[in-house]
Length: 346
Image (cartoon, rainbow, N blue to C red; front, side, top):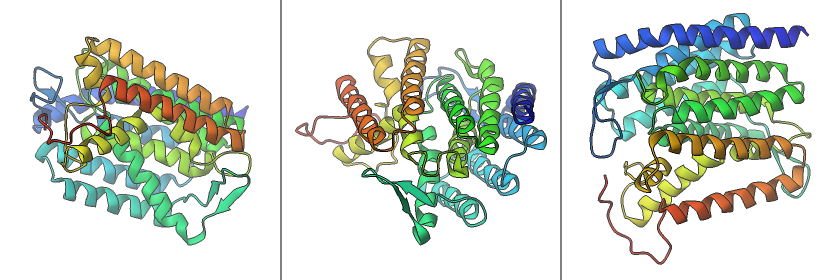
């Protein structure tokens, strides 16, 4: 009962503090020129203040004071560094190299002084002990999730809503596994997203910006890395990958698509999931609700199959193939035999 009360209190504090700080973050962004200006690739027609990461970080810090979460010091410090990289990019548009270097240093600090992924499930049964490989694998995992959420951040309420649904699934799973510390951390992320969404849902008053999108990706990585999904009773990293099937597919399609076109994989274009559905005639809200539905389905499948060590890998692969097929159908990636050409949308 005590664990449940702590979880609910942390959740409530995250909601209230994030909601209270979001208008302040909006004013801060406007004052210091952190504005997302319209361009051919973006959806917004008028300049929009960014800096949503400030409100999310405030909600996380306030909730962590009342919630007993592990490694709170190093997690908060690295979350701040990740957010800071995003804030600087929101204001001055860092080069891809500098932006990644800042992320790399923050994640390296987190892995060296915080938790690591020490086990991975073996698709053929049992668990694999990573040993010294735990450091590079954990770094790769955290950096991937940080950038996955930034890749898909393109519509009002899209990334915050996907993160909310994903963190809710992780909360339930962690609680089911009696990993109450990780469940509290996940509930805090749910609360922060819930407090932010009223200001970010279409028509948005403030954007996440890179500061918010990178931060949400880091939070999701921290939840899974903390150990909610480690151990013989679970399937390791395949659970959060399955939960995040939509953003993972979107990122993979972006890398393949840009490779086909002969441009750098980090070069922005206008063929992401949300772009393609908009081009097919969906409204912004309809696209976001489709994304929520798909994430809800993949998250439900992940929770229901979390204890099926061998079968879950087959389910994850099967769902991944379905998502990939759908991606080709809507034009997120070109068929293999298609002509490779430079992007016209960069």
